[in-house]
Image (tube, rainbow, N blue to C red; front, side, top):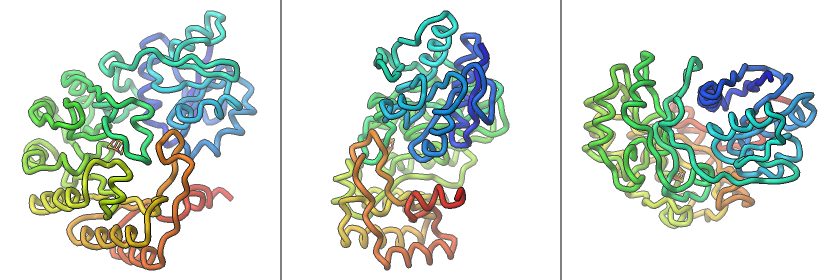
Length: 368
Ligand code: SF4
C-alpha cells in the first residue's frame, strides 16, 4: 500500500514527526502535491482547512485527515474525509495503516468516520517516538499545558498534564544539526508540572546541547511569569538567542482574567523590563478584538503596546475564535480607529509585526 503525505507549509513539522513515527512501523510517508493512490494523509488547521476540503472530498484515494482542526471538528471533517485522526497521530496513524493493510475497516481508537468514533485510550509518550528522521523538524520537548487560555487549542488537543521528552533523547536530535530549536507550549516549563519552573532541569538539558541553541524563542515561546533573572541568566550562559518571546495578550487585567491567562499585565511588564535590563529583546504577543473587550479594555491594550514597544518588539494579531476552545463560536469585536492608527504607526517604525485585519482578508485575499 502506497502512503502519501500532502505537502502543506503549515504542517511541515507534523510531517517530520509523523514520517518518523510511521517509519518505526515500516511505513513510508511520501510527500505529494495532490492526493494520490493508495492513501493520502493531511494535517489541517482551522485557517487552512477551507483550502483543502474540496480536494479531500474529490480525492480518488483513501484520505486520512488529522491536525488541530480535525481534532476539534472531527464530525465536520468526516463529511469529506474517509478517516479522521482525533488527537495525537504518532500511535494512531501507523496503527490505522496496519489495520487497513490487513483488510480492516479502521475501527480503532483515535479514529472517527461518518459511521463511528472510537476515542483514544492513552496519550503519547514522547520518548517512544523519534523527534524526526531525515526530514528535519524542530525537537518537540514538551506537550500538554495546565492552563486553559480561552482562545487556545493546545490543551484541548494534548491535555492539561505536561509531558516531556527526556534530556538524552532531546540531545540526540538537537545535536544532529548546526542549530537547535524546540517546540513547547512554554519552554521555561521544561521538566516541570507547567506551573512551577524547574530551572535545574532546563540547565541540565542545555548543558547537553553541543550546537547553537535557541530556547524561549520561536517556536518555543514562554509565559511571562516564568521569566526571571535566573531563567535569563541560563539563556545568557547556554543559548544563542538575543530575544525571548512571550504572550502578554491584553493590557486589561479584566480581560486577562476572563481569558484565564493566569497572569496580570504587571507580570508581562516586569518580564519585559527584566529582559531589556539584561540585554535581551522581549518579543511580546498581544491579541486585539477579543469578543468581550470594551473600548476601555482595548485602549488599555493599546497603551500597554505603546509602552512596551519602547523596550521590545510587539507582535499583534486579531482574535480568531478557534473551534474546540472556550471562545469557539464568538466573534472578534471591531477595532477602534485609534487602535488601527497606532498599530499602523508602530509597524511603520519597525516596532510591531503581525496582522490585525479580518482573518478572511489576511489568509484568503491573495488567492482570489
Ligand atoms: S496559550 Fe499557552 S499557556 Fe495558554 S493554554 Fe495555550 S499553550 Fe497553555
